[in-house]
Length: 253
Ligand SMILES: NC(=O)C1=CN([C@@H]2O[C@H](COP(=O)(O)OP(=O)(O)OC[C@H]3O[C@@H](n4cnc5c(N)ncnc54)[C@H](O)[C@@H]3O)[C@@H](O)[C@H]2O)C=CC1
Ligand SMILES: C[C@H](O)[C@@H]1OC(=O)[C@H](O)[C@@H]1O
Image (tube, rainbow, N blue to C red):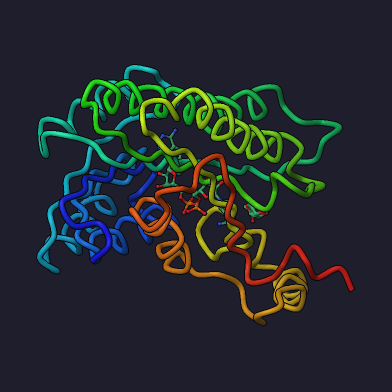
């Protein structure tokens, strides 16, 4: 149990990678708060799964692109559990679209959710941790897409590079408060965000063939790395990025 007596809040955790991290961290003893955008049933199911396994959890609906949501989520964490030890900024969208005719609203919504959302949430969490006075950890779910591009992701990949950079700069700003800030860089993980894209068998098989371990990732694959970064095992790890991609990035030829 690496997170006993720790409180972890996670954005966008009703499903996908956020849910995988929430359930995995709860198995390691963390008390969990999840933010989610819209699917009440999915959020309730995540909370129920954690509680059924003997853990503690709550869910709060909120749009991460609204700065007030960040304040409300942090306050809810304190109201439920009295403190926040670890904050995972995970919520994100990737509406695949070509570059040359990208609608302005698609670009701006992607920036607001993925980058502004991570920024507001990380700032609100950090302020709470500084007030508590015993350090903490920020984790941002960036991506392999912070390192490499995507033809239909010209609006998305800069947000993933942005949250990686956010963790590097917050590591500098918050080290003096004992707050460690790191980025997780998933490869291709099977979730709703890429369900349509990977419904194309040829694309999916190509992505699998590029991955050294021979399979695409599952949300559960992200739990261990997140638990590690949040735990005292990673006590001297800050400003770092952890690529969790089954060997996708290194496989050029
Ligand atoms: N699935 C993948 O291959 C990869 C995903 N990522 C990142 O992982 C994160 C999670 O994505 P997935 O689990 O794959 O997708 P998903 O679509 O399964 O989950 C996204 C989550 O974000 C939430 N969300 C979306 N907009 C929101 C908003 N405005 N406010 C609050 N919550 C909001 C959704 O409700 C959902 O819980 C994203 O930041 C994504 O960029 C990074 C690398 C690879
Ligand atoms: C949504 C994509 O399939 C996914 O998102 C990422 O960040 C990965 O690099 C994949 O492109």
